[in-house]
Amino acid sequence: MLQRRQLLTAATRTSLAATALALGLPHAAQAQPAYTVSAQQLHDMLAQKFPRTVPLAGLLDLTLQAPRLRLLPATNRLGATMDVQAAGPALRRSHPGSFDVEFALRYEASDRTLRAHQLRLGRLELEGLKPSATELLNVYAPVLAEQSLREVVLHQLRPQDTALLDGLGLEPGPITVTEKGLSVAFVRKP
Image 1: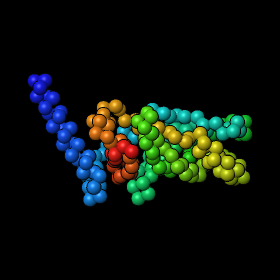
Image 2 (image 1 turned 180 degrees about the vertical axis):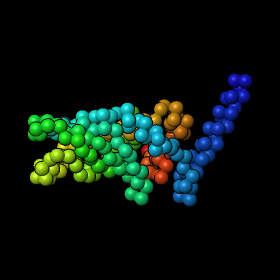
Image 3 (image 1 turned 45 degrees about the vertical axis):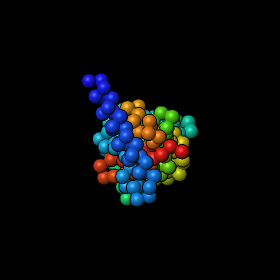
Image 4 (image 1 turned 135 degrees about the vertical axis):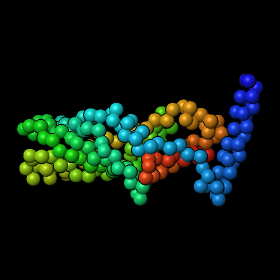
């Protein structure tokens, strides 16, 4: 039984090795092995990281609730809308509102994570603030929030997710946003 399993494993590795060799050819670019992450998996992982409080230069704190993700395949990005609660020395009381952000993704090899980067922050809307205070917040809050939200982990690959391809000299490469989630292509290690 053990010998049969070893033969099957060897055959699978040989087949994958042949596929990996083919990946080096320009016409085989579409045949790259990929790891997929569904929109639901992204939502579940992010929900574990919220609520999250982001301090803004000692003036106020934004408490962000779990985001509502939007897949944006046309721009290869993700969007998120978050309910927010703003409070702190710059405000007399707590103000509810919402916050929008768009971002690209990158792979971090040191911990096998998919991370948000290249954040584009949308408008911060808070109920009950004077228009001048809202405008002031929208001038400074995006820069400060970007510094605090940078590199949020969206998903972590398990060692078994990459072990076989790692043994073939492949590593996660380009991340593509699709209508159903993410597709992480595997490419040759440099």
